[in-house]
Structures are given as C-alpha cells and as structure tokens.
Length: 324
Image (tube, rainbow, N blue to C red; front, side, top):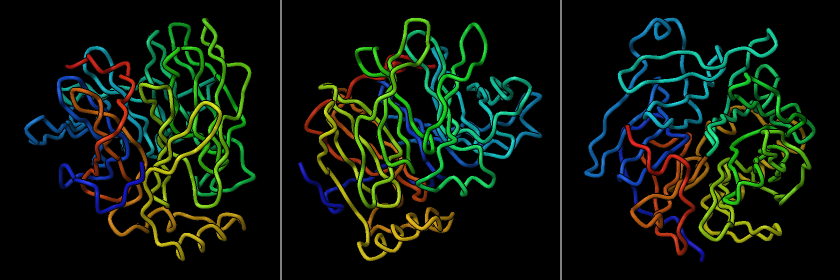
C-alpha cells in the first residue's frame, strides 16, 4: 500500500497543535490542544474545547499538552511540555490537578507522552534532560527516560534513550515499545508482571530523513510509525522490515535537514517549519471508526487532521470502550 498526499481526506478545523489523538468506539475523537486542554470532535464533526480553566492548579500552571491519555472515568492525563513539566490530570469540567511533578525530590522536566496500560499503570516519557530541549536533537545524545507510575509511586523504569517519544504495550502484553526519535530507532523492553522493564532490544533502525515519533499497533501486531519532518508513515513488522505507506516532503529541504542533524545543528526552526506540500509535520497516528480501519494523523503545525482508509484494522487501545 502506497499513498500520495492527494489521496488524503481531512477532518476538523481551527485546531492548535493537535500532536496526539485518542479515538473511542463511540465515534469521538480527542486531540491535544496547545491552548491548554483537549479538543473533542464529536461524530457529527462538532468541536468543543475542554480547557484547564478551574480548580486550584489551573491558574499558575502553563499547561502545554503534548501527549494525552484517557482514564476510565473519562478524565485526561496530559504530558506537559510547558516549563512546569510533569504529568497532569484534566477533568471534563476543566479542573486541573498534578499527578506527577517530582521524582526523588527533583522536578520532572517537560514531558512528552503518557500511556495507561491494561493493568492501570501509567508510563510517562521524558525525551531529554537537556535545556533547552533542542540540545537533545542530536544523534549522540541518549539522556531520555521512561517513568512508571503505579500504586507504589513513581519510579525510573528505563534510561539512556535517544529522545524518548511515544510508548505502547504490544497486544500480547509482553513488551513495551518505544520510539527514540533522534536515536532513529524503535526499541522494546520485556514487560515483567511487576512492571519492571528488562531485556532491551532494537526492533528497527531508521535511515536518512526518518525521525520516529508516533507509534500504533494494528490487528496483525505490526507497528505503524509516524516520522516528524519527513511526514512519513512506515509500517514495521516484528523483524524490523519496513514498508513506506506515505511520504510528503520536499526532498531537497529534507537533505539539508539531514546534514544539520548529522552535524549536530538541528534546532527548533527545523521542526517548526512545515516541509510537506499537504501535511504539516505529522507526529502521531490513531486508528478510528467502528471497524478501526480509518487511520488519522496528528500533527505539530496543522489546524486539521489528515485521514485515510487502512487495509488492516488497528488494535483497539485500552481506552477504546471508555467514554466519560
């Protein structure tokens, strides 16, 4: 399956940095919103913004949601990319409260992505310890990590990652997969019954122009990867074989960015500029629709969402049947 940008349809409008998406069986779609909350898109296309606007923590905390996750009661977990960092809970009424802002007495930096697994554990990725974060856009930097949050508290689950991005649990429940964006690889850890991560493995390494960000499993257990900058969607099997599904990028400009990356000069302007004809720096993919066969793309720079029919259904996420 090979798609062209002209094959895409679009959904929504006036969105603000819809980096991460959540779809439910009820036909509702939720997008992270840089204004400080989550945008809900109803099945009829109506949009409403759930904004962090009430509660004792709402005022002073600059919430910039990057990754989002849903909880069984319909509340949202927000990985805060703002300076305050950490993980926050947003209720449907707008109340905002902290979930995890410190570990071992030290503040949690700007956070990338949260995941709630089938055991109720929360996984939170921190891309880099560098400040500013753009100093982590280097092939030789591996200071990203993963936190585990459960009934025992907050723990460092894995360290030494090359710009930690999205994580997902394999449909079998046996592995936690993670994208290392500027390490340019997809890795996985054996997920033990007690939540420990062991036996790190590299599943796939990516070549020039691919910077893996989003991660989703399909019903056949294969992994769909979205690449920022190059607007690529790549399907990866469990042996690391890769199939390019979609690409939308100016090849000459991408070559210039590749030189900047390899020479340690990649910076915010490279990520904050759209390099595609149609797509605007895609960052994530979620499967939606009653049969989970509609792929929808989150993005960093666009104000609407691209979508296309998938030849294979997605694996239903943990939150698929949750609806607040």
